[in-house]
Image (tube, rainbow, N blue to C red; front, top):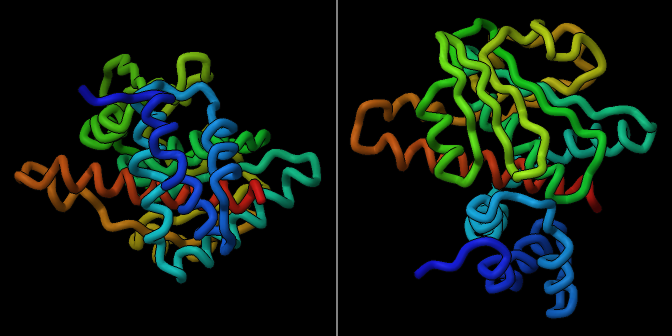
Length: 248
């Protein structure tokens, strides 16, 4: 029987500590590794906590250098905002606001909570509105998120990373639509089409490009589940890397 939750997390604390150290260019000994495992407990759902320790943290090591450089720019923005006593608002943008931008919004909020970083607000939007794709929703559920679907053509999903965490309301919208911020935010382009279509994002204090390959390419194929899970994991690892650098 597979263990999950904090027991499984503690069994993998050494791997997690090593990955965090590698990401930050340093070394972590056994005592420090145990501290990492014991400190990083923000009340995630047990299955999600297990996903973070066994899959997300180890995946941070594989992030390419060119993508790390963009994530570091974003981490500086977050840190500077928080140091100034202002909220760090992050808006993740893709064309239809249906898959990658929602995954990034959810994983970024989770990573901020994991590292105990207060003042981070995450949003998502697109150049046009469609709906949060149920395949992307299912991938997040498989990772351990609790997601409530109220129904409708463009459901306002309520996503929780922990039993006591406030829900994230996720639905498809254009970038300028409420509740997205109108100014002073970081615009993170998560698809190449939106990146090309929006060289300037009105009101953005920073624009960062970290495009992801669209898992839509595998819709209705035998590879669908694996492709969505892989994209979710890639996004999760990069959001956790981002927040680990803010935490430094």
